[in-house]
Structure formats: structure tokens, C-alpha cells
Image (cartoon, rainbow, N blue to C red; front, side, top):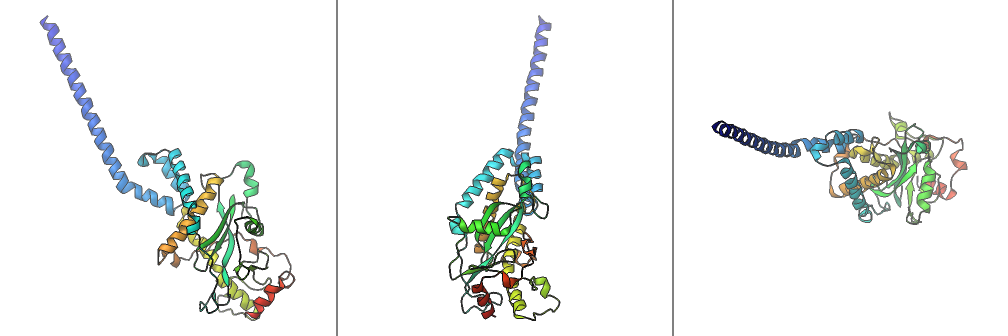
Length: 330
């Protein structure tokens, strides 16, 4: 009997010791989790969020998927919240999109004083996207990339007036612009105003293109080169002013890394992300007196449609109203 009691006493001591050890381990584990979560929230999350904004989308998504425990959220939760945030930003489009303002008659701006009543400039740009395999031929660009062709219209101070997303990368810029004009709530151009466009678009009422067959791009006027004819002078001033849309796209992509690289999001959500980034770009420029990206040399390459030469001289392919307007303004 005494031996039995001693055995029970030993077993009881072992059980109590085991329970106390388990309790201590659980307490220490919770403390470590809280400490790791606190350190992660203060130290580790900042560089991850920095990569999400400023570096490539591929790297950012990879970091989220590999270090998901740091955010304590699943990939599905992150995707749903990205969609919700995009939808919320898109509802503010009427407040965030810039209202077009024509260049006044007494303008002294060295770039814009030559273009009275001009509302800004427009162009297209490629933004990489993820599409099903069967749709890749339609989204393949002349640069052999899978991308969507985005039309952007910006003001003289590099704020977006109108943005159209969703067109396939193989679509010509002129076709995208035509769709934007024909939409019920699409791009509206007042009769007294116009936008500057490159040679990839048709010259006509509301859209002022440069002369074909003449020097045009800013690189052509470097190293002391000066225009020798009225058409070259017009092209030089046109290129200097229209450059605003290339800088606008360049700053947009420099600001949002998700627009510079391929995305894990399907093209439908990517189109929302593009529009949301454009609206946030406007908000930043409205609220910040000095945009730190203004001093960076960022230019967008565009779609390259203006490099296509159809062999037709500009004199045979222009609207005569705009012809006399251009010559008389020089």
C-alpha cells in the first residue's frame, strides 16, 4: 500500500511539472508573438510597403506571398481589399480629375503662349498586364510586350483631365481616341479649344498635330540646332509643349511601381488600378506645392505610333482650318 501511494505521489508530481512547463511555454510563445508582431509592425512593414509603392509589382507581390505572416492576412484578403480601395478611389473621379482650362490670350508661359486656347496634350502609353493565353495576340504590342494601351489627356500642369483604359496593346492610338470621343461620357472638346497630339493622330478640329516630314522631337533641337523654316519653328514649339504628356506619364510610372512591371492581377482589376493611380497622382499634385518627382528626368516612351511614316506629306493630310491657324500663329 505504501509503495502504491509513493508511485501515485511521483506520478502526480510529474503531471504537475508537465502542466506547469506547458503553461510556461504557452506564455512565452504568446509573448514572443506579440514582440515579433510589434517589431514587424514598426520595422519590417515599412520597407515592405516601400517596395510595394516604389519598386516593381512582381517583387512586391512576391514579398507579400513569401512574408504573408508579417501582415497576418491571406492573399485573398489582400486582393479583396485592393479592389475595395480602387472602387472607393474611382468614385472620386469627378472631384479628382482636372477640369480643362484654355491657355489665356495674355499668357507669358514660354511653352504655352504660342497655343492660345489650348487645353493640354494627349497621348497613349503601354502598361503591362496579365491576360489569358488566348488573348495575348491582341494585347501584344509592337515592342513584343503584353500590355494595355492607355489614353491619357493632361493639362498644362501635368494633371489628368481624362483617362481611358482597357484597350488591347495592338490597337492604334487613333482608334483608342476615336472610341474616347464617341463614348457618351467620353472626352469632350469645346469648339474653341484643342489638344496637342503627335503624328500618330489625325490632324483635325480639336486636335493639333505637328507637320510631317519635318524635324520634330526635342532631341532634334539639341546641340545648337535652330529651325530654318516656319514649319520647323512650329514643330519645335509644338514638341516643347506636347512634351507635358510624356512627363506626366513618366512621373505616374515613377510614382507607382505597379504600373512599371507586370502584375499578378487580371486585366480587369489592373485597369481599375491604373485609373486609381491617375486619380491619386492628381490628388498629390493638387495637395503638394512641390512634387519631388518634378526634378527627375522621367519621360514616357509612349506607344511609338508617331514613328510610323505613311509616306504622305503633311500638306496632303491636314484640315485646312488648322493649317491657316498654325501658320498665322507663327
